[in-house]
Length: 394
Image (cartoon, rainbow, N blue to C red; front, top):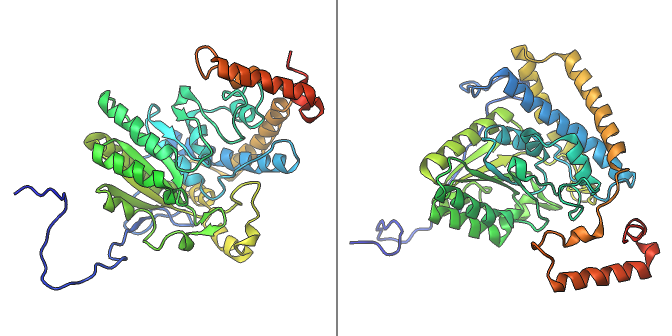
């Protein structure tokens, strides 16, 4: 007889609860803090060029974050978000993808963007919202996007990219593409309704999407133990009938391996996979946040010993692919290069105000044109409040 409930029916004759912690998800770890492999672990196949590109991208992300947070404190940009402590999660996962796999990010995946080929100049143009910015100045800083490298533009509202990723991957499947979509989000975003809608949609329609949850311990100031009581996020995949992996997010070899496996399964079986990365957000949530109000310096220092770049660096040195002198020289060169690019980008003119509506439709509709005209009139009336824009209206 067909079961219309779509559920396993195993009969029992006495009532008994299934405990909330009945399902335990293991965490994949390959690389120790000292750069050695765990007993019984094997590193994924990586050639020297790829391995060093991964490292260089992590270092670039760290140096960029340091410099741009300082720029925000100096009032040169309005806002910034660091990837500090999660570089392995974003870079390791991006390195395991095909260049034409779609990336739908949240806002801490600059490492994935850099690995794809986003240039330093492009980073700076977006952060300063100048006329060379691909987003035409219409986004906050760190809301990157690039059609050329399959990186969907970031939006501020949490979780909106999750059902979008399910839909995009469904289209990839219908078109017969051998590609996947990876969707990044934090454990806080997993509390949004879009998380549940997106995962259920992907599972039911069998879409080749990788959901990559960065469980970094805090949703701004809310610790994970005040967000949920289940065993992290990975166990939720089972409720939707999909496969899951939990991985040490500070271990780039483990992240790379887990994403490789997830991508292969997603494409071969047209099924979604949920990866949960377990790392720690070493920095503040954003430049607007003060973490001292909700966690201690002792806690932060403990997790600083789990630095993903240091761990991977030691592994590369052990393999003979990296040495101290070259590494230090690269970091110093990056600091100079980033500062020079910053000085150039902040002097580039801002986009014309007409770009607010220029490509929403093929031709601006009357309602948008009216709004733009009203905005221009407002700026002309109060030019001192809009010193940059007021001088470029005509």
